[in-house]
Image (cartoon, rainbow, N blue to C red):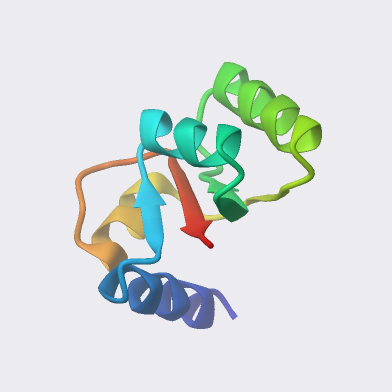
Amino acid sequence: MQEKIYSMLGLCMKAGKLAYGTDMCIDKIKYEKAKLVIISEDASQNSKDKFTRLCDENNIMMAVFGKKDEISYKIRQTKQVCFCNNR
C-alpha cells in the first residue's frame, strides 16, 4: 500500500500538482489551494500541531504518512516535512 502512495506522490510531482516545504504548504493552506496535506511521521510535534490547526481551520484533510527521507527520495527533492496537493 505504501508503494502505491509513493507512486501517486511521484505522479503528482511530475504533473506539477504537489507543493513541498513548510512555507509553500502554509501558503497553499491559507489561500485554500490545498486539498490534502501530508506530514511525515518524523516531523516535530510542533510542526504536526501547527499543520493540524491550520488544516482544521480551513477544512483541509491532513494525513501523517511515511518518513521524510523516503518521501523526499520518491519525489526527488531534498528532505521536506510537509507536502500538499494543489487544486
